[in-house]
Length: 118
Image (cartoon, rainbow, N blue to C red; front, side, top):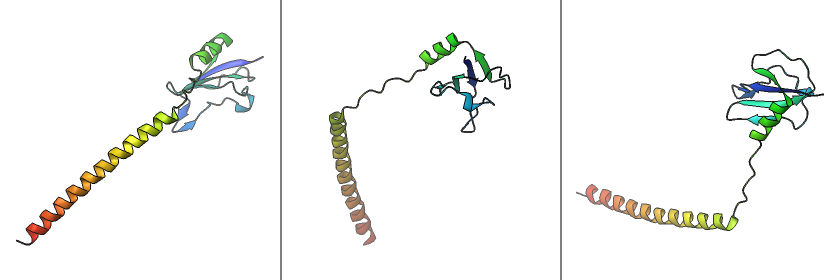
């Protein structure tokens, strides 16, 4: 039989803080992280935990609803050709800007040399 918990304020100073729950009793793969709200839910074989105000025992239905609401979004495949075209266009823009910068630098150098000779 499993017990289900929801933990608030999971991250503390950049470190995960499981609030005293026994990680060895977590059911592998049952952790559902919600980084937006800094919390997670988990199924565990640990029973009767009441060691921290940020840990709430929830029902299996609540856990399943939480899991459904926070399941990872599918990754959209990348169009490699479109990325190549964008990179090529960006490289052309950079080359054009370098040309403009070099021309501007030549004018500055000329002005400095001309004024320096007065």
